[in-house]
Length: 252
Image 1 (cartoon, one colour):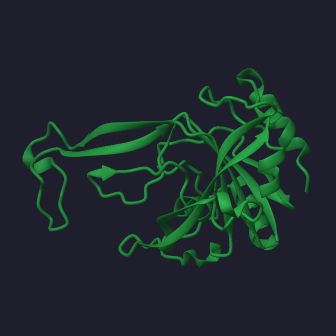
Image 2 (image 1 turned 135 degrees about the vertical axis):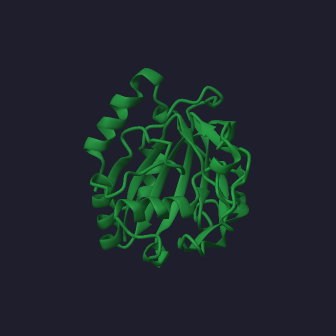
């Protein structure tokens, strides 16, 4: 088993769990289904293929900056004659604009530890370096910042999150002595502090990405507040250079 580290940052992100066409929601953190879809797209897998290729991966999310919730009032097909508006599944025209509300996280940053079989991790890392279809942060319009792939072939990526990966600045976070407290989400009971974890259930376990048969199952997550070394918190002007230094010197 080995792992890789991803940094998901950009102007906007959106990680839907229970979206319908007229209301596109976002969870407060990247979902397993979205991350799996990112890997599948980078590898050029068709939506009809079984997402079980990624079932043995473990995800741990570090919330560097939770971001600000934003809702976009969105219209499609407005200002057109009825015969030129959007077509329904029955082949009829809607006759008016379709209105939807779409939720985003603005200015959020997450660092993800992905752990799995060596061959799977190597394959995903190579695909992210040279993707067939470009990665995005939940929706195609949400372009990721760089660097996206911080490191691959890491022996213990979760430990790297706790001790080594530079922490993006967050004005709401205040150090306590030599530590800063940061939210983590684990898809297993945290072995180091199980008694402090809060359990969450989320419907983001991908069972099928087929366009006509998308299905998701429930997954249990565990949320903790981890005390990290305050030295990981990078001043805004130094973050990029520290991230690049980490990428170049990350342990295998």
